[in-house]
Image 1 (cartoon, helix red, strand yellow):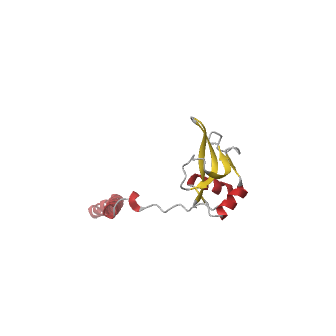
Image 2 (cartoon, rainbow, N blue to C red):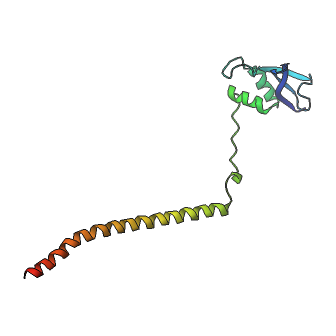
Length: 151
């Protein structure tokens, strides 16, 4: 028999209250064919409240030793209680990234923009150097004809 530790819903309409139960995995959620109640969960309590999740740790350990598996929500409770290790987070698939062709186009565009920026910077530096050079060369040129006229 495959046993599972999961939540069984109790409480009123719009006021949920859950029991953490051990049952056969083939049974319905609230079938009543439960083997043991090993805790309680009240989602109406504040998240930091101690009354939100109450677990009977000894019973849970014994049932897990017998082969019972926890549902996803109960597994999170057990991780928070420190009974089991957290499941590893799967590596994100590459479906969220653009295709290789699009990535190549983006790289080419960035390279082209970088080349244009370099050329612009070089042109500005050359223009700045050219603007400074004539001002220094102009006085020397003006002095030469003045000396020739004086002789």
